Length: 74
Image (cartoon, rainbow, N blue to C red; front, top):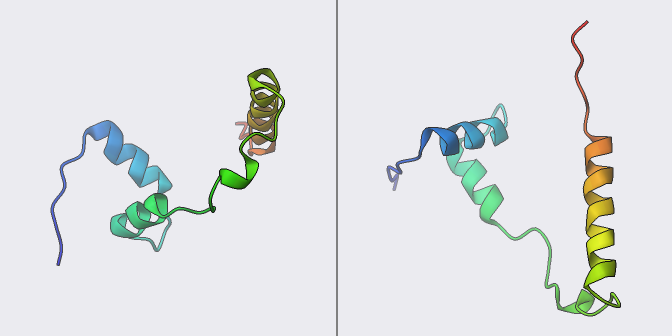
């Protein structure tokens, strides 16, 4: 059964950018709402404190940014 869902223009554009060429909008919603990992309980408390966790998080963000393709017009 299909359902109609109202989205803001911003939400629609974000969803459209995430949609693969052969993927429906329903497929995108299911993919994004399906847990991809497991429980976080095994990693709780692995870091000494919030400062260390924040440092690790910032490094992850920096590495993600560095690994993204950067397009340049020539």
